Amino acid sequence: MEGLRQRAAVLIEALPYLQQFRGDTIVIKYGGAAMVDAELRTEVLKDIVLLEHVGLHPVVVHGGGPEISEMMDKRGKKPEFVEGQRVSDAETVEIAQMVLTGKTNPDLVAAIHQQGGRAIGLSGKDGAMVRARRRTGEKDLGFVGEVEAVAPDLICGLASQGFIPVIAPIAAGEHGETLNINADHFAGRVAGPLGASKLVLLTDVRGVLKDQSDEASLVSELDAEAARKMMAAGQIEAGMIPKVQACLDALEAGVQRCHIIDGRLPHALLMELLTDVGIGTMVVKE
Image (tube, rainbow, N blue to C red; front, side, top):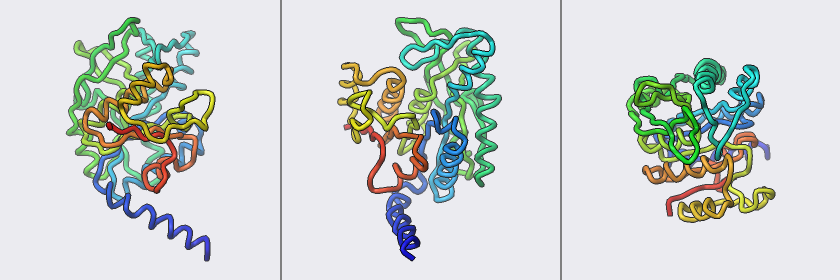
């Protein structure tokens, strides 16, 4: 009987959050161990299906870095990264498109169907959903893109009909060339035009850490100004840079809250969104 009471208490704790977020769009960047580990993958997809069934509109943007690197290795190409961005020559972007849209995306769609959801696989090219441009900087990253504009109608229409859009971060550039876009950046830039109330980034650490070697140094809440200071001071580095930048982009575009959470924890999504005490780093505008 006590176990049943605890289950009921969990549902009651979730009720105000379900009421608050019902009808809201939640953009979820799905990647890391939660994609690679079969058991974790199942738990994450169950969470996403549950969110849709209780009235939220989850939109999934997925990565696929390990699978892209594996395919590059098979072709004798060594992956190279700059500040979390994969350097992409013509062959690399071809591999990325093949892996993301030809394998990772349809596999995720099928896995969501197995959990009782209805998903539609897309990329930024579909319906001219995303217009991109080549990323510029001190180092030429090749066919690496950044989102320039988003046409949200296709995604919003699918979500309103009970489908879960699952989007690969590939888009066309101004000359029709294929561009590989960092999934964190992609998610951060589409969240605003979609009118999302939240952006959630699944990663392989607890969240933003004051000390990169100590997971106990988790920063549970971070405002935009403090995030920029930490980035300037080098406290946020490597793969965490595009995640924090994605949060800043989303907040600037009107998203209310962003969350960087540990996707290695079963049901991390539900714990962060539907309980009184979150588990990761929440990034807010001010």
